[in-house]
Image 1 (cartoon, rainbow, N blue to C red):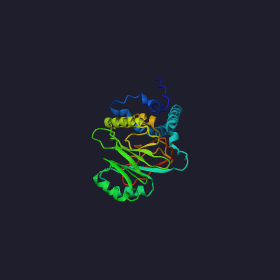
Image 2: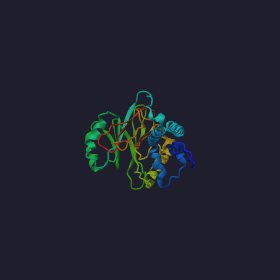
Image 3: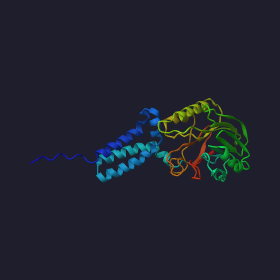
Image 4: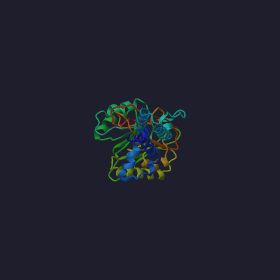
Length: 304
């Protein structure tokens, strides 16, 4: 009589894949960032939670104790990394002033409507990116009356109900007019505001974005303003290692609502590319706005 082969334990593949996902969550910082590959992976790191849910279902179907324990361990790692950020943050009081920011999307015929929807929220400051000759004119027609103080450099601009003092171009890269710095006479004391739009990052093509981010970080580190805000489209996810140097200089509050605060693409946000980093200020509220005609969703922060 031929011998029967010993049965392989159930769910081995599922369990090992779950452990591999957990290992990536724990030690992704050790992966070499060859041609920006690790940066791209880290940009979508929270979405590994979806893979773990699918693996958990597979473990249940297989009735595998090993797979179930592996998925549970990986889920614990995921929760330790993103669980707190997933929950709404506690309010730290009433804001002294509010700021909204959005990438309009160049040559967008809906720019006037977008500007109108932002102004309807009655923020003190509106920061916009991807301005061009056409949409700048449309935006000015909407915002110049309720926001009498504004300053535009290249493709970025700021509109404010408070007086703007000074103003200069932030040279993030040769030939790129994508950054400005200006003091806003906010309640209590002036706030130095940087409005920026970094270069896009694509698989195997993150060099321009990384260089501009490095320049921005160095500029902020040299700036000794007591109250400072960097706002705009950084084209860099919160979980991307390239953002770490800026995060060591400034802080960004988690979203005040449920979720991870993703802003792009507007139709189904999968990553947070739009940010509001502060120093010398407290973020008392932070939210992502509804889709309003751009390919990004705007953000709103309350500051004091």
